Length: 151
Ligand code: DAT
Ligand code: MG
Image (cartoon, rainbow, N blue to C red; front, top):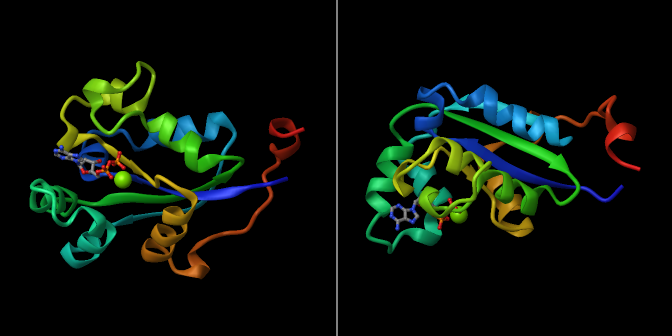
C-alpha cells in the first residue's frame, strides 16, 4: 500500500469551539489513520517558524497572535493521498470560498478564524511533522480496518 502522512492542526478557535471531536471524526470516517496527537501551545517563535513562508504578508502578526491565543490540537494522519485529500476535507483557505460539506464551510466565516490547518504538499507535510513532533511521538500501528478501507 502506498501511503503518506500529513500534519493537521485544530487551531485555537476550533479547540475553544468544541470542534476537535468532529474534525477527528471526519478523518477517521474517511478511513485515515491517526498516528500522532497532542494538545500544545508552542509559543510565538515556533508559530513564526511554522508560517515562515508568510512572514512578509500584512496579516502575519495577527495570524501568529491568533495561533498563540490558546492550545492547538496537533495531529499526524496517515493514508493514501492524505495530503491532498486532507486539504479537501478542510476546504478552501477563505471559508466564504469553501465548498459545502468541508470543515471551513461548515464551521467558519472569516479567513483569520478558519479553524484548522493542513499541510499543502508532501514536502511541507514532512517539514511540519518534524517541526511539531518528535520521532518517538509518532506511532507505527496497523489499523484493524486496513483491509476494509483498502483493496
Ligand atoms: P492555508 O491555511 O489554507 O494553507 P495559507 O497557508 O495561505 O492558507 O495561510 C495560512 C493561514 O493564514 C490561513 O489559514 C489563514 C491566514 N490567512 C491567509 N490569507 C489571509 C488573509 N488574506 N487575511 C487574513 N488571514 C489570512
Ligand atoms: Mg498553508
